Length: 466
Image (cartoon, rainbow, N blue to C red; front, side, top):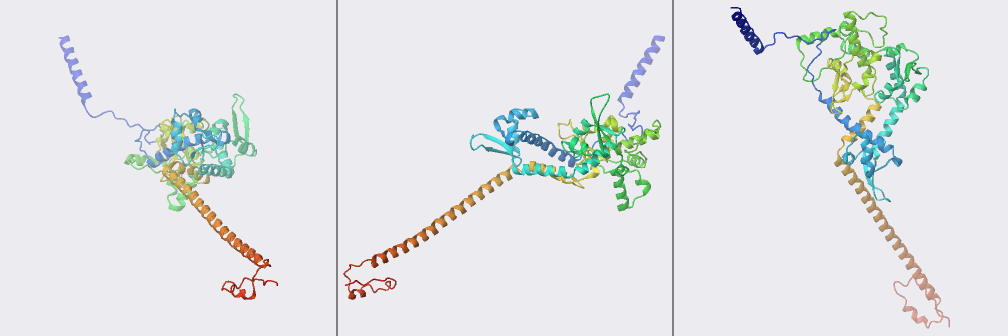
């Protein structure tokens, strides 16, 4: 009897288990939410093609910049085509890939034949050299602004100092020159101090004086501008961020409420010292998370192009108390940041500040940004236009040659006419001299009528002496 009852119970349990597994509805659905805020962590990622197209151009210009540095490092800033493949392998190019890459951008690279050696060389075009010169001038002109940006960047750290190598890696994004250690740090001892760490061999840039005027964040200025222009409620805009969701992003009712609550949550400023606060409460965790958003926002605002890679932000993670999973954290706030995976086969993640861009361009461009964008314009320029430019140049040369040839012809003809007139005048003088010197002639007075012709008025014939 016991065996029969156990058999029935076992059969019943297997049937119920199969019925539960076959049901299409999940009865135990749990929504993945953030621990400190009500904004969901895992959201539907929506691509914005404006930023992705920007990174497609950036991918090409990054390779072009490597080639430019390679050419400028050579003697006479030229590279033989025979050595191009060997040198390009250092940049990650495959065999015979460098030559085809150079030919794709005729407005940046010029292939010509050496007049003496009769071999092909590669050099930068005049437009590319002008772009490099313009970028250098813009970089030197904005060094005072770069000093301010570096001061604000160091003031955001917890200890008031940043590692020199980390700043060196991100120098291009912050508009610092290559020799910023001397031209920015050492030339401004009233702002910076270069120190060596006791525990390691690393060098650090330390702030000397914390200026209270520099502790105003970019988002605070944007809030004030929004408040003056739109006249929004002061309580709603006091701790809010400018949110622009990508096109196609689905905003539900509960998500909208969660964002509204998050916008009103207070937080500490990225420039504020929080070492004396108790950070164990839930309210403190909420403020810390929003402070991390403000720190990344301020970090992007300090860059020249309002964008930086996640790998560069990770260098400042420990100094600025940023979360470990930066990619997921930025994707959680898609209305403020945009993360693009274009540029390096999905291995490179670039973070954009959404409010700083409109239709793929900076809202407030600067000279350094415009100079860098000119390189992108040269890269995107069609090769056909380069052929047209070459044809125009050759046509101009041909036209100049025709003008020179016509000038030569006119010069020869004019000289020929002048020489002919001179020769005719000399011939007449010789004729007159011959006639004047003809003393022993047999002409008589009666023979003067013979020379009395219509053209004989200018001819004076001497009478013979008897």
